[in-house]
Amino acid sequence: MTEPAPPAGVLHRWASFLPLTPATPRISLGEGSTPLVRAAHIAGDCGLDELWFKLESCNPTGSFKDRGMVVAVAKALESGAKAIMCASTGNTSASAAAYAAHCGIACFVLVPGGKVAAGKMAQAIAFGARIIEVSGNFDAALNAARELTAKHPVALVNSVNPDRIAGQKTAAFEICEALGDAPNFLAIPVGNAGNITAYWKGFGECAELGRATLHPRMFGFQAAGAAPIVNNAPVADPHTVATAIRIGNPASWKQAVAARDESSGAIEAVTDEEILEAYALLARREGLFVEPASAASVAGLLKLARAGRTHGGCAVAVLTGNGLKDPDTALAQYAPDVTKADATVESVERALGW
Ligand SMILES: *Cc1c(COP(=O)(O)O)cnc(C)c1O
Image (cartoon, rainbow, N blue to C red; front, side, top):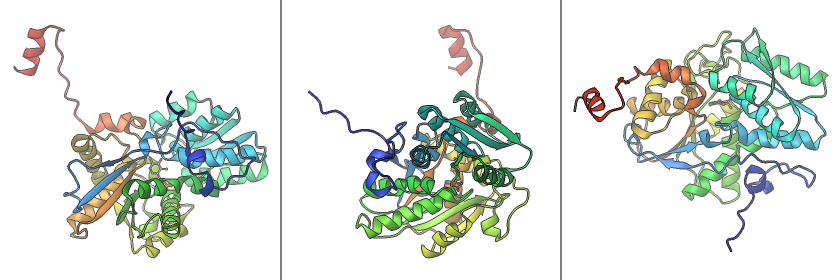
């Protein structure tokens, strides 16, 4: 007889590090415990001895948002909530809608009109969320969600909810466990800046608890058209192909700056061109299909390397979301190499030029 597998999920695996009580329901869709995969080819291009990818795209709804959402929804259930709400560039709503369906509660999502990638919209629809498309951008939608949840008995599950950050910090624990220590550098895309905040908290706790001997330098990357932290000023009309980080006034701005400064790191901008170059490099040379926002982490490392600012060491790049979420960008990016043929040996040989 084989031993039964331990229960899956962030709430089981990291219970003692999370704000749980005996009354918190231990829900799970199997989030967390994502692979840490070593780069096959591009570490040298990034000026590193070792480059690892944290595949947060392997979470149940295809992004890291699930790690924090499971904690936020469990705590909402514990407090008696029957409904949750979020503003979203797409992945938060996909995740919130999934956990709401799993727990039998209602989910309301506010999305900026016309700017959510097709796969993410399909997820929210499939999970049965009530979707309100607002005419403003993400920042305006988040303001509305904050006011609505203050007024109505609905729990806000954006990353301004500290339970989201608590859940997301567990990715840092997993990295330290897998590598046996913290890496020298963490490369991460920055949108609303909850995730960089969560990782920095997680690495800090690892060091305190003796699970790591060092603190990584935190390298956050914003899209050039949505780079308020880099420019030190909110962006009224953010634009970028990386819709998940199309945010002009990050809720966790101060915390992201603290993570940068306390870690002797940097938060810098990468252009859409650089993002799409890294997006193609990850797919074509590493076999990793991520969404454009996720490629910002690697675009940033390449940019630092080209400027002579990386000198070996070990980095982890967080690949935050799955490429399947944004099929339109993939199809627009590549000239599809498809030739038609009959289903015969001769015809396929002819098509291949053999
Ligand atoms: C949400 C998200 C980000 C940005 O994370 P923040 O916590 O908002 O900084 C980056 N990539 C993907 C795929 C996301 O879904």
